[in-house]
Image (cartoon, rainbow, N blue to C red; front, side):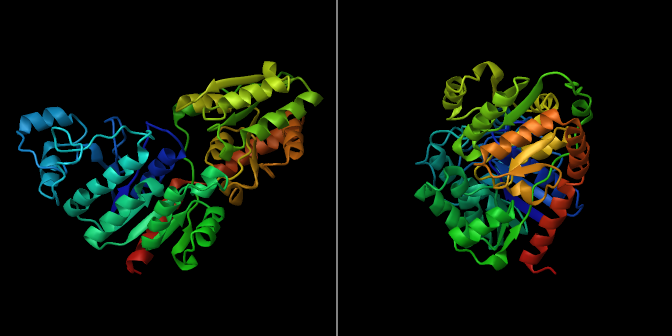
Length: 422
């Protein structure tokens, strides 16, 4: 089975959870043994892992014809794409796009990530998808999140192949209900045109059914998972804080969706009971300055650390150095970070309003707004060694069973159902 997959980000260039999930799903599908994935990315850098998918650089796909020699094309593409693929794609240009802002290859550049002209890049990506869909032979289309839904729809119209979309989040999650009508329109158009909708949690599934008016029979829950830790991460030492200062960590975007203010307010309550705790707020976002000011207003700035955005090994070093991990999200479609913390043996506290709460048992769950319960949970883990040890051991054991291979098997099953092959 061949899958034409549209993604927006991919490790090691991680801007958020979408890259992690996209890689995990590619790995899980590859593990099935009979699924080949062609993964389209706006701007690959050449250092991506090609083990689990053939990566197509959309910024090198020609949409306007250019008569170019082999050596020139090879020098321009580097290790991102082969000249043979470039020429093959060039044969399937379907309209004259010279009026677009194309470069010497007849292709369109992408900034990568989430630039200020994001909607323009989403539209350009969908135009290029028409060339890719005409070039490749595939059985089914899989589009990740609203950024790639227009590309998925275009590929479906060109090829007649069924479209699966993967809802990693909706604008209801990102905006706390203040929905952007343009984004909502793109999301709903993707869902209306999809033959199968995969949602990262039952929470998200219900949002898709009720807020986007989708037929429940085509909407399925596909929970995320975690990768096994590499030996390099396993070897990171875990400090022993028994009898010493405890470290409590928040790790994520500092935006209203993630509920950072509840973390600061709960920290303030904990610090009224004990001063033997430090709080680490790792990440960046539009609420960072606000959180720094809030910590200062509460008189707890001396117990707070703001190390900024972390990636890769830094994340695991931070998690392993922590005694408690807190995710107080207001609306979290899934939330992979608590699973990563539990993998490291760090007890986790998560909001009941998060998708991962549906599959995790060996953690503490509180309502995001209940700062009293959150403060009690933080204090209890920091001062009750038996509770810390239990959540550390059992949490790790539980999360080690949540694998991308199992996720890949379920997605493959949904592909077969959508194709009518079983």
